[in-house]
Image (tube, rainbow, N blue to C red; front, side):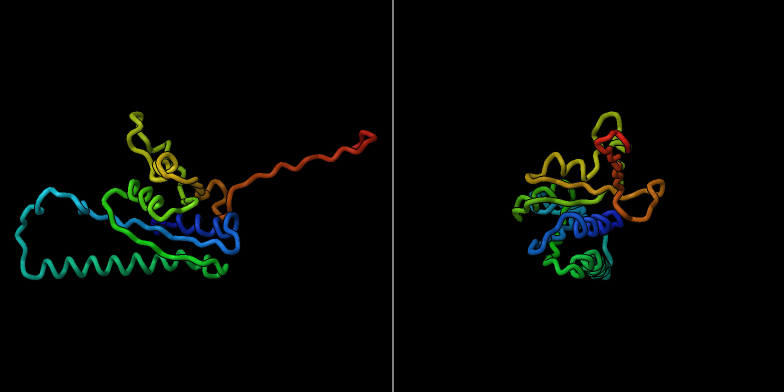
Length: 177
């Protein structure tokens, strides 16, 4: 989950259409950071800091972490209401796409359900280098990935899955319908 409306829709969709009693869900969120964890490139460049800067930076990070945890808990409400066991797993990394796939593998997940606005192919340039997170996960995760497209206003915008079922005409044996 990326804490967006699309993620909230995907959670609701999963509760209504995919999850079974006894399933356990892990709400996985990768929080962005500019720090490369584990990189051995030496210390960051020195910037002049006043005595309050490190403390205010820490306070900003703590506030953002609290907001992230609160928002993730809000996204989990449909799971809680349906009685589905869940855990919230939040990690930090500079490369959200790669980290998602690594965490999916590390946690041994059997499927990934994620939301999408459906912009992937449109927003990608002709060079194909700017892909969406969901597109990346479809091609790199070790398990099946289900991408739930968020309904647009032209689809009715009622936040219900966009599905069309064609009714079949029943023809009786005597050829009358």
